[in-house]
Length: 124
Image (cartoon, rainbow, N blue to C red):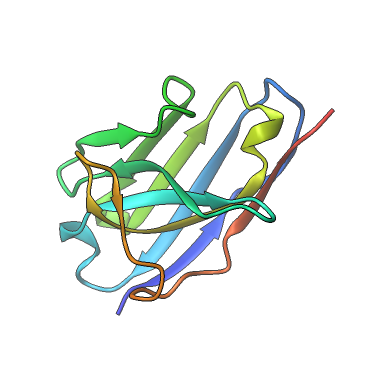
């Protein structure tokens, strides 16, 4: 089973940038599709970015053009570069598996374990 530890969140002003990291353990990391999810208080968790084992990416419309997902399979790490941040990006960000990148299909909530996430707050 893969362990996931997210880091890199913080408080930034609108228009600012953050780079999130997700450190994973487990030998299967390099062969599975991964993604970044976010959840704001009172709102449903949503998939915002995904990447296949080979590096093909896809994004939710809300972050397209502003966020970039990448991965380093040798380091068992997935990243999310977040630029031009908006207050509506405020949420706890998690990484986890993605069932299908092309269709942006998230894993079922109860099927996988979630890490602690990392808090991103965008405020002036």
